[in-house]
Length: 342
Image (cartoon, rainbow, N blue to C red; front, side):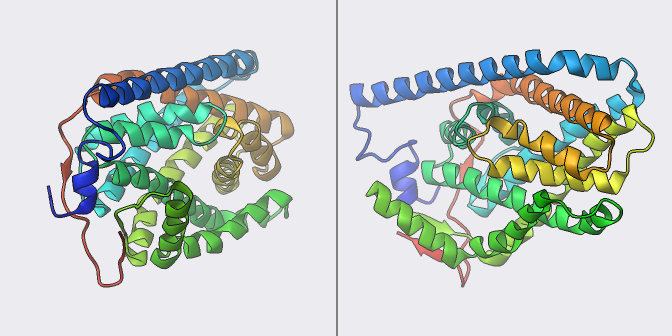
């Protein structure tokens, strides 16, 4: 631990000393945080159960004639997809000077990510960030790592979708959902360290609080985008396998494009829990599948990924709930072009 780092001195204990006084106030703050976590977790489970109850009748009808071998392939792809997001997050933490065992980061991901099923969009960031903070990651780096990892994840999605765009345009033509790809150059620019520094300055003004944080160099962040590319191949392959279980006519490139684009559109639709409804509309419009097959694929794939999230969170909860241990915090690696916020 680098004690000369202002962020480490202020955040190593999990919150700035000036904001959380010792004794009862500190205990009360911890208690309120735990209560909020329980409430968000309960709300997430409520929305998950409601979603599953709504979708299951249609999914069971679709699965009645499905090839279960392809469904099994989809399950494997979904597990690899969700777990690989945790793997990518671990590399983001390393970029910020924090080393955490892979199993611990994946556990934080599964449990914290359940918040995406609660309306509002901010809950998975708070969930993952708070679990990382409790696990020994300084607060600023914990929350920054989640925000940065989400940006990198969906920037990678846009790159993958752009790569499959020619296949989507052949035969099927253009549809309005493809305009989401215009976010790609904007995302690349927003990842630049100078732009991020400006965004941090705005946050400082809004919160009236100094943020001690060194923003990663642009090229280092862009390299991390590539680490999330496998995630989207897993997501797309899992969805294609669902479609393949229902029909032999599913085109891998078109379903891959439609899947990745649909997840990106769902993410950008911040108020919608887990992009519900948005993903299905994009998949139906862009996959080249018949309407009935496209709808069935969307429903079954959604249930599959929800179940992977829930089961993964249940399995990982004991690991994610550990208060301390496992995180080794050092100074943020410095670069000539890095921007230091202090």
